[in-house]
Image (cartoon, rainbow, N blue to C red; front, side, top):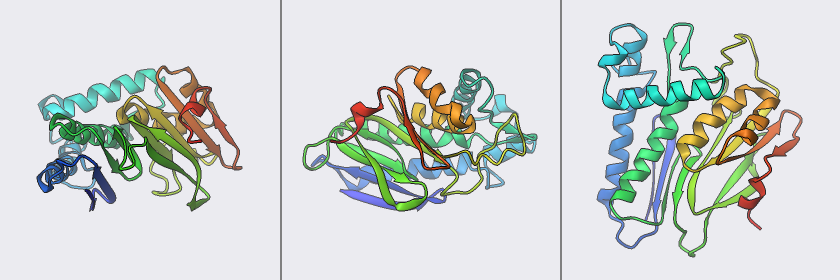
Length: 247
C-alpha cells in the first residue's frame, strides 16, 4: 500500500509492502505529521516555534519534543563548529532538524507496529526499512539539480536515511551564520546517507552551508557518506559512498 498526501508544504509519501498494512497505519503517520506542523511550523503564528521566536514561550516551557529538537540542534551546532544554528537574527527556526526527526519518528511509529518493509519520504528525504515489493533493496534516485527530471545516481538501501540539501527546489531557505550575504551558489546539491534520516538531514544542511569543504566534513564524520554536485556540475563523493550505488 502506498499513499501520498500534501502536508507541511511538500508531498509526504508512505509505502508499506507488508501484507498487514492497514489504512489506520497510514493515518497514524499522517496524524503525526499534522502534529509536527502544528507544533514546529515557522509559518503558523500559534506554533511553539513562532511563540518562542516572539518571546511568548520560554524554551524550557516548550513541549518534550521541542527539548529533543533543541538537544539535537545544539549537538549539530557543536559538531559543525557553528555552521548549523537554529537562531538567525533573533528568529528561531529549527526546520533543519525537525524534518529529519519527524520522518524518523514517523518511521518508528510503523516499526513499533511490527512493519518491516516500508519507507517514509517527506520532500525527498527518506527513512527506509527492509525491501521493496520485488524483495530487493529500496532504490532511491539522486536528482540532477540542473534538470530535476534526470536522475544522476541511484542508491540502494535496506535500512537507513538519505537527505539532500540544496536551493534548487525551495529557493534560498538556508543561510550561512558566518556570512549573512553568502549567496551559497558554489554547491548545487549535497546528498548524505546516514544510519537514520536524522543524521542524514542535519548533516546535509550543515555541510551544504560549508560550500566545497562540506564533502570533506562528511568524509570525516563517522557512519555517513555523501555525494556533492557543485555549481559547475562536478560531482565529488566520499570514500564509502560507492557501496550504496546500484549496479
